[in-house]
Structures are given as structure tokens and as C-alpha cells.
Length: 95
Image 1: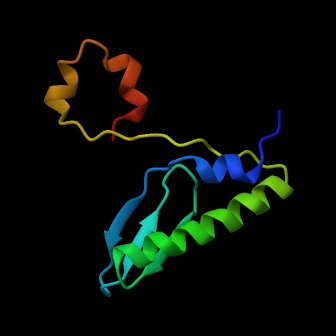
Image 2: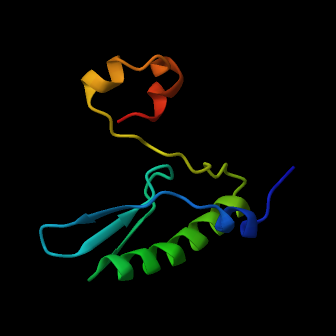
């Protein structure tokens, strides 16, 4: 069943914020390659990212491309990860 743009826009994608060497803020959705935006503040970059995300998702739907669903990535120290009993189950989410 094909989902509408409103479905994908209602999903909460994790956003990574980085401050660039020139002082600009970069907001990125890592699960959607190439989906990023810039601003003079984190808030501005996130606001811009929402516009970019909507335009990108619209285009992907028109072209029949799959839109990746949100994923959460975990940062866990290696020694702590090695002690987990369920590490095989979560390995794909650990960076």
C-alpha cells in the first residue's frame, strides 16, 4: 500500500546537528542520504531541513522511490557493547 506524503512528514526522524568550521549549523537526517540543510543557528537549520525534507519526499514519491523510515543510532563504548547479552540484535543501530 502506497503511503502519502503526510504519513512520511508525520514521522519523527532523528536529526544530527553539527557546527561547521565557518560557524554555520548543519542539520542532517542520516537515514535519508543527502538530506541536510544549513542555517546560522541550530533552530534555523532544523526549520530549513523540514522544507528540504518535504520537497525531497514529494520528489521521491513522484519518482516511485522508497523513502527510508526513521532509525535510531546508538553510541555505546565498545567495552560496554561487548558485555550486552543482546548485542547481535542491536548491532546494526550502534555507531
